[in-house]
Length: 450
Image: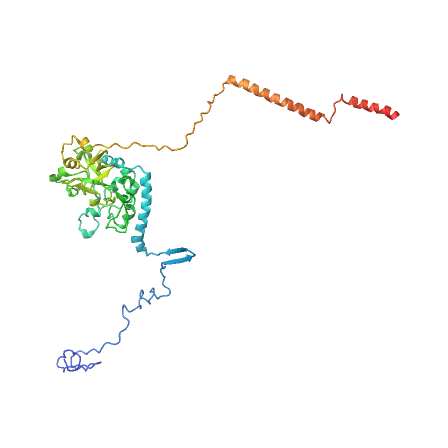
């Protein structure tokens, strides 16, 4: 390093040390490389302010007069006397509309449509209970609790998706409820909360809702899609005895007696329910406040019973009686009182537990389907007027009627014709009437003589 100068380069072979001036270098020694000068003033390199397309003053930039401008949202206020008129014109970017605005708008629309569907459709536990037997009538049996989503994500290296990222089995039950068109709109190979499933998931399914519940229990929200409102379900599938029973492997003999009719990875065929379809629970009703999106897979729609307190999460005051309703495998409905023996309820939750449930009709009585009712229209009583019986005349009876009619017509016509003849005859005297007129004329002759 030379005193007072900038760092120099190593001298070339045989050359003296190089002294560097502020702006230029001394001649190098023999064989030494030339010393570069100081850099010149900075130019407009890549990323210079606004010199390239997309910059503030470049083509398409904010200051480009030819660049298209997005419409600006605005709020107009107009005050007339004591009335204030507010006009709001809001413009959203496409992504904002798709991810934030549209889900909320569709949520409101689905709520209105859902309310009308619940009020107008035939719903209730007995309607939903028929889906199980209909599914058991197929070779596949009842659907597995979550759809077996295709392994299309290479980052998962062939691993199954977790149940919470799959679509619920209710999507497969929709055709058995007469709603196959809705079920066909579900993208089962995507997450239930994916954008492509938000709209169909927002639809309300009347059969999955309890009409007597508050309307707030007919819709559901979730942190997986915080900007969306989903149609809810007030029923869940029962996976068996144990909170983790939905995850059991049906091929494991150690848990065979604890399996229910559906789990995350399995369904049931009729021959697998050896405890009897009438004794095995398929679905149970949940109380208001515990509703979940019907399209959501995982614990939202499939649950196992707590072996210490199997009624936990199901107790509700049903018409003055604490308990819940259970939809059995044969399509019947039973009322489960809150005081039921937990061994009985756990036995009802398994399909092949081998429990003795001889007194099940006493412990969990059947609930008959309500009979269709007709509504009488209230109005002032009106005495019905009974019309006189119509008698078809015989062939013989027609003759006197026809004759009478002919006589009546002839009688009516005769005086009319006579009257008309008299009127016509007044100005035209008959031949016999001319003689007196002529005679009168003869009488005038003597007057003339006079």
